[in-house]
Image: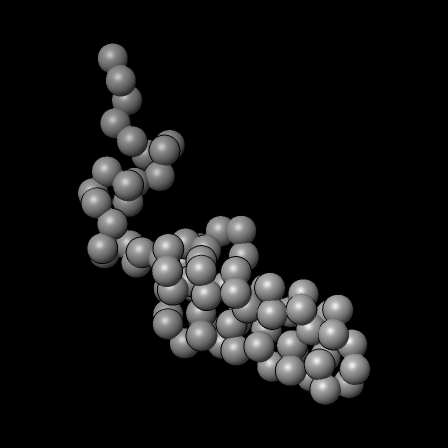
Amino acid sequence: MKDSEHPFFRPLWRRVAVVAVCVIWSIIEFATGTPFWGMIALGFAGYGLWQFFYLYKPADERPADESKPADEAEPKE
């Protein structure tokens, strides 16, 4: 989840699926009596919510200067 703006995460359903899997994993861990791993999975879900829904900006909503990768930017002379 380090690169949340990777093209893989552009479709909304993939971002929702990643967070949902973490929440389901957390529920399973709590249900089986391992709250330590349940809290870790909840932490992953929280981080996913933060990255994929709060901070996430699709490519068409970013300013023009942010949409170009650094290596494709105009050379400075």
